[in-house]
Length: 271
Image (cartoon, rainbow, N blue to C red; front, side, top):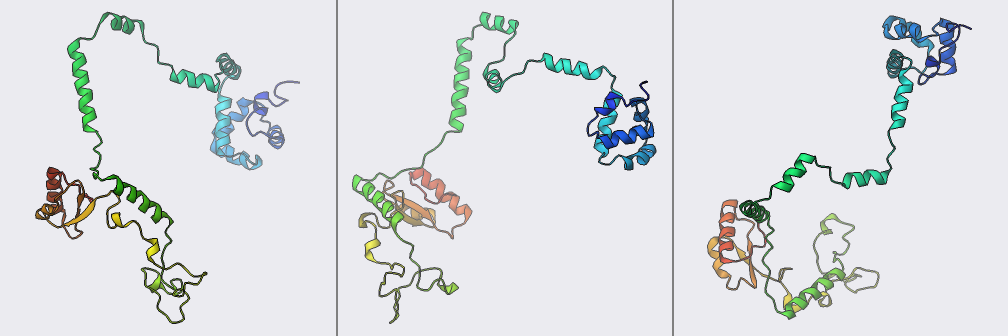
């Protein structure tokens, strides 16, 4: 049988080529790439043939054009090139990334002959030190507290983690009662009588240590400050810290922070 009477192998191996498509091509007499390629390139002829080739879209058409344009021996050569390349495993790839890049012979010879001078080394060290100083972390000022207060602060933190959330009686029924706390005083109140199935009430048993009551979590005693002159109220910067009032503007706030830094006073709400 001649080549024109049978469908070419290149057409059979095209992507998404099915038996139904092969039957259509044989019926139309498009048995070789030379006959099918002009129809794929011509939009009018393709619009006539396309309804008969169900499932072949524009992307598949572009792939067919690219594959049929290539010479017959292109595919085997491309396969040979791929086979010649050694297949690397995942471990070999990670090792290759970690390995330093090989330097050229000229660079190695220059590094071996030239030795860095002492002045250059000193300049590099100074530059490195300057860079570290720019991004250096400045820790917050800490309170100097006796051991008894430190122990009481830890105890207060532990008690606070176990303390229940106190909510007003019947907070779930009315929106106005969902915030805040008020002691139940009703004659028939179940919460006032402390029945078991009601929520806990505020009582002295839930208090923290009296020694650290009112102190900031950092251990400082808070002193309200509204201007620069109020910083004079702080007599012991090791135990007292400033808290700027919420009504103070940004300009005056910056002056207070600058003056506090000069005096060595910690500002709890810096901004």
